[in-house]
Image 1 (cartoon, rainbow, N blue to C red):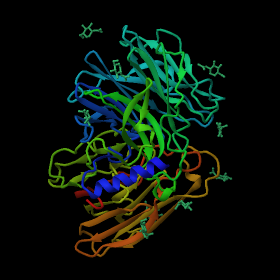
Image 2 (image 1 turned 45 degrees about the horizontal axis):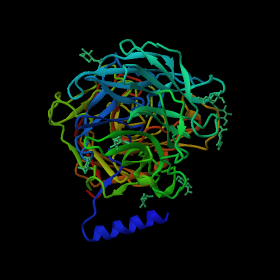
Image 3 (image 1 turned 30 degrees about the vertical axis):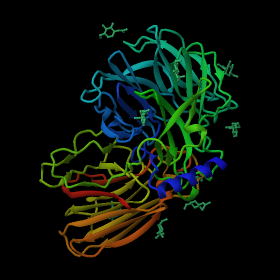
Image 4 (image 1 turned 180 degrees about the vertical axis):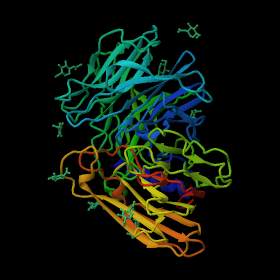
Length: 561
Ligand SMILES: *[C@@H]1O[C@H](CO)[C@@H](O)[C@H](O)[C@H]1NC(C)=O
Ligand SMILES: *[C@@H]1O[C@H](CO)[C@@H](O)[C@H](O)[C@H]1NC(C)=O
Ligand SMILES: *[C@@H]1O[C@H](CO)[C@@H](O)[C@H](O)[C@H]1NC(C)=O
Ligand SMILES: *[C@@H]1O[C@H](CO)[C@@H](O)[C@H](O)[C@H]1NC(C)=O
Ligand SMILES: *[C@@H]1O[C@H](CO)[C@@H](O)[C@H](O)[C@H]1NC(C)=O
Ligand SMILES: *[C@@H]1O[C@H](CO)[C@@H](O)[C@H](O)[C@H]1NC(C)=O
Ligand SMILES: *[C@@H]1O[C@H](CO)[C@@H](O)[C@H](O)[C@H]1NC(C)=O
Ligand SMILES: *[C@@H]1O[C@H](CO)[C@@H](O)[C@H](O)[C@H]1NC(C)=O
Ligand SMILES: *[C@@H]1O[C@H](CO)[C@@H](O)[C@H](O)[C@H]1NC(C)=O
């Protein structure tokens, strides 16, 4: 504690005198859990998890660890990733990005199902490309083993290892780090699955040794893992040994990353790390963390984000951030440059940039930037946000707790079934909308519909649809015209969101403010793996929707920029 205080004091002094520079975390805007880290030459890459979002696994690139650019996604085609009916928070889990002899390998796990009886274990796989900047990634090459968080390790002698998190059996669910050798051409197992590590915590179903990465550094093998589950007990620990499979010598300084000992720290849940040696011999790590607003875990709507930190070495062990908890500002390293930018899209280009996502693999394109120049047109289908399918819904991650999203919609609904608007979206059960629709009583008029969803007391049976614990509130507000464009906004604050609308040139109306817990507290038995996004959508609520929904701009403004 003393050290932290001294550091903060120094930071203030340096700031006053204009000297201070500090890296700013989280370094990628918006939810980006389970970062994997790779350097090839002087190019750095980070890839993160996307769950039921499509395309899958954003690839971020940097030359200096400060300026990061989204250069593409690993899984962009239905032949690679077919998320039809995939439950929320299943889908793509933690990736591993590796490079060997001219080829990039992106290792991943697509979880296509949960079951009521036990968590059916998924199959991991990898895709490859020789050109990470412009290439298409291959179709998946599947492993034989069951488990998640798989990663590849290429040993000096040409052996290739797959290392992953598996379970002893489906009933006890004691997790462990498993490994085998594989044939890199086919993914086929060459050796039987071996349990190589149980983690450092007392072994039970919540100790969760996972997220393994194997490294060979100066003739010593290291096994870096995540432990304690991805919530408040999350941490990173490291072992070393004479082979990629151990036996392991425990680092006496474990855990090497754990913010959970002090719940007052603004960054919590730190763990799931990966490290690289920089081009100049400096070492760096990335890990996930979460920032509960006001110290309250119910206000963690940006989810798990990616943090970067310096790594040093002592006695042959890596030390993360000088042994200090990782934080939003790490003094004295990299450049003091915020990753947050004001985003404006006037929809005057022919294609959408890479920052937009679908929910699940779309059956076919549902948007057009050319049907009406200067507009993004959504052609709604029968599905709506929240359906376990693929609605005409386009999402962009929320990048800052304080952030305003605004758009303008030209839409002439023909009934209350035809509806288009915006969403503050997490997943199937956590989403809130403000939209334009027809008269709920069947008249000719046009209405604004506000729909908020709150998870009630967290009790009741686990259910695949979770609807048992949900309280949905729908309110309608009449509009004055049947044709004027309607501006729609979602104003994100640290602990709540306010939804608003303005018809034509009329003043803004703000019919509802809802607690951000509505977007971050999952239903009983559900998960909270992603984070908030802003979305635009169009739906026929169970019917075809022939009415085009034309949006004329998208503005996302992190406040204070
Ligand atoms: C090494 O590279 C890092 C990352 O680009 C940079 O911050 C650091 O200043 C470099 N160190 C030296 C000694 O050049
Ligand atoms: C590296 O790739 C080249 C070209 O694909 C191949 O000829 C060579 O055998 C590979 N080397 C190793 C060590 O796998
Ligand atoms: C892991 O724990 C199990 C159960 O206690 C034990 O049988 C096994 O030997 C342990 N494996 C390792 C690699 O520590
Ligand atoms: C597992 O053990 C830890 C103590 O290390 C304990 O806090 C936790 O409740 C246990 N979890 C289960 C599911 O028994
Ligand atoms: C690896 O060994 C070299 C040469 O002894 C040394 O300079 C370097 O610091 C070592 N790297 C690590 C990570 O220990
Ligand atoms: C955390 O936030 C939730 C949702 O607003 C609220 O119900 C709860 O009382 C808060 N907890 C604390 C300790 O303030
Ligand atoms: C449309 O209006 C009818 C009649 O009020 C109502 O029962 C139905 O739930 C509404 N549908 C939607 C999608 O709002
Ligand atoms: C909802 O939960 C209650 C208990 O909390 C249970 O009695 C009821 O059967 C559940 N309903 C459904 C549809 O699952
Ligand atoms: C929303 O949250 C902000 C920041 O926490 C707070 O200042 C504001 O009063 C809240 N608004 C409402 C209506 O609760």
